[in-house]
Length: 435
Image (tube, rainbow, N blue to C red):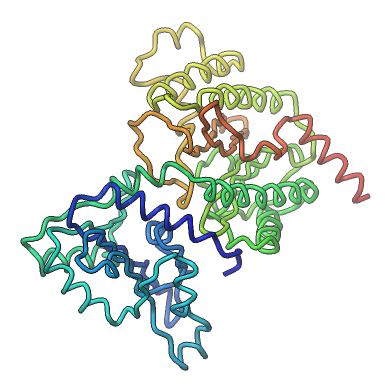
C-alpha cells in the first residue's frame, strides 16, 4: 500500500457497530469488488469495495468477510477469507496478504483462504435464520452491470430460498455517515495533500498554460505525497467551460482574462477529499469576476454556518437558496419582484445555481448517508455553492469539506487559500519569483 497501515481498532470498532444493528441469528457477507476488464488482457485500476474495506481494512481483490455473531462456535463469529497466493501469482502480481498480515490489518483472528468459503458458508447457513446481503444501495446509483455483490445475492436467494433476506445498506449507511477519529485523521490527510496540490497550482498557472498541464501538476503532487491518486476525475475548466458542471476534457488553453474552475481531491487510504477553487488565469480578478466570487463566498460562509447537528437537508437547501437569491439580485442577474412572485417549486436562482450545496463525504466522494435524517456530530459534508453565467464566460464554485461536531463544525480545508485577496497575493508572489 502507498499509505501507512491503519490502526486495526478502526475496523474492529466498525464491525462491532454493524453487528449491533443485526437481527439475531443472522449472517452478513461482504465481497470485494470485481476486477473490471478494459481491453485485451488489460484491466481498469482496481479499488476495494468501500463497505468491505470499512469493516476489514483489507485492500486486496478476492476477499470475503463473513460475520455471524450468534454462531454456535465462537471462532466462526468473524471470518476473513483471503486469496491464497502461489509462486505464479507472486511473480506476475506481487505480494498478497499472509494470514498474519490479514490479522494485523483487520483485527480478525480467523483468517482462511477463500477457496474454503463455499463449504464454510454452507455449514453456517444451515444454522442461521437469515442473511444480510450487501449491494450498491445508493439513491444516486444506476448500475446496469451485474457486479459481484449482485451476482452473489442472486446465488444466495436461489440456493437458500427459505432464509430471511435482509439489506445491509440501512445499517452501513447509518454507521458510515458518522466518522470516528481514525477516519477524520485519514480525511484530514487527504485534505492536506489536496492543499499542497492547490498551492502548487497557484505557483504554476499563468496565461498560455493548458488545462491538462494543470491536471498534471495536481497529479504529480498527489502521488509524491502517497495519495492513491485522484478521488474522482478532476475538472480543470477555464473560461466558458467552467459553466459545464461535469467538464472533464481538460484540453483548452487558459487565456488571459479568463477564470479557471478547478474541482479535484486526493484519495488517501480510500478516503477522499473534495475541493473546488476558482482563480484568475492572470492572477487578478476583474471587477465583475470579483463581484461574482464574493457573492459565492458569501453564500458559502452562510451555508457553512448551517452545517451543524440538528439541521435537516430540506431546511438547509431552502435557506441556502434564499441567500443565493439575494446575491443574484445584487449582481443584477435576478429581479427582486420576479423572485417574490416565483413558484416555490421552480425557484429562479436555479438558472445560475442548479446543483446541490452539500453531500456526504468519506470512503465515497458522494458518500452514503440518509438525506432525510437530521445532521449529527461526526458527519462530514462538502459545502460547494456556485454561480454560473455562460453569457459572461464566468463559472465560479467554491468548496470545502466540513466536519460536524457537538459544538458546531470544523473546516478540514480551513488552511487552504479561499479569500480573493489571498489568491491574488499568492499568485502575484509566485509570478514574481518566476521572473
